[in-house]
Length: 83
Image (cartoon, rainbow, N blue to C red):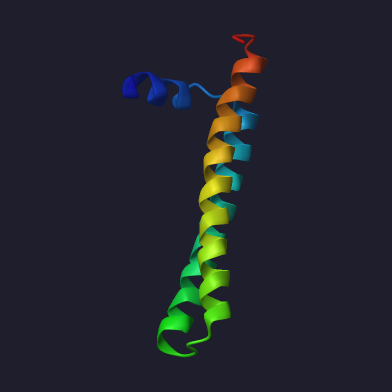
């Protein structure tokens, strides 16, 4: 099962793969931003709003990352007319 997923990931269309990579890089940057905000909350400013902003940004980055992966596989399957 996992072998099939990695095989599908390697056989993605070039444009789809490029969009997925850019999307995942964006999600990683948002995740780093949320980590910086949470570290600022922990060490510098103990304001509850910073905690909530950091946690929500982290959740959003994870959700967007998963959506980029799933949508990339779905779009590639539609392009290859497998669905």
